[in-house]
Image (cartoon, rainbow, N blue to C red; front, side, top):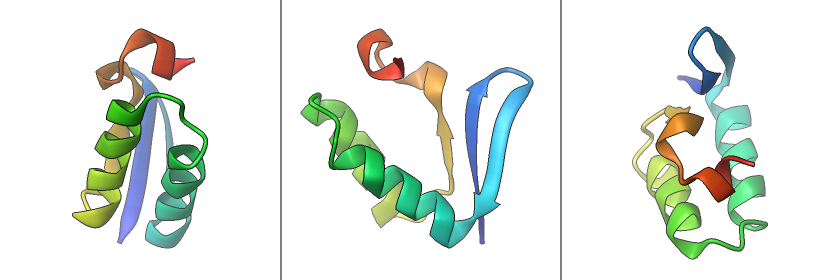
Length: 62
């Protein structure tokens, strides 16, 4: 299964499912915001396959 990270409307990054999960897990371990980290972990755990950066709090988007 593929994964998709939407950086902003019209700008996205598609990757294999494994690379998508690896990328989110990389971010999870480095985010100081536990709520955002938990959100990303939920995406990985439930194989949701997409992340919209605009859905994250402004500090986490940076």
